[in-house]
Length: 170
Ligand SMILES: [Zn+2]
Image (cartoon, rainbow, N blue to C red; front, side, top):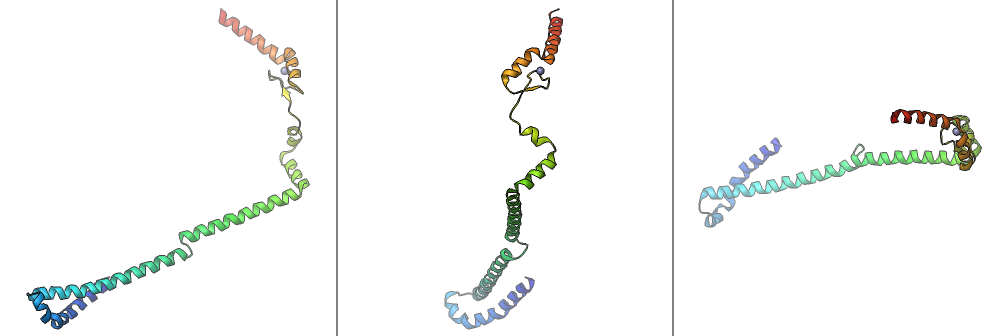
């Protein structure tokens, strides 16, 4: 940048007198003062230099940004790598699921060994536990209600409630 500015000043310093020499006589009709002719020449030289420098700078920055988007380590490159990794892991998971489905006995063995005796109890049809919470289960809600009349836990709870109610009344 400093080098370019030096070069620019040098070019203006060398070229401006030449421009003044070359077109000074014809400019004398348009721009009467000599200082005005010098300024006009300097501006014309500098404007050409600046325009050229602007074009080079724009081209270089465009080239850099074009390279950046395709380089490894750039944002789009990382996103692409991430998507590839996700696709690979999903394909692996899919293969595992396909294998498990094609071998139902193997999958069953795994689930049994994992959870012990749980599957045999959870696979039974729904039961109706005692509403009072004594832990007994029945095949129908009617059977549970019938048990509730004689449930020891419920009767004990009722006796406690009566005692407590009596305390409140006194
Ligand atoms: Zn009960």
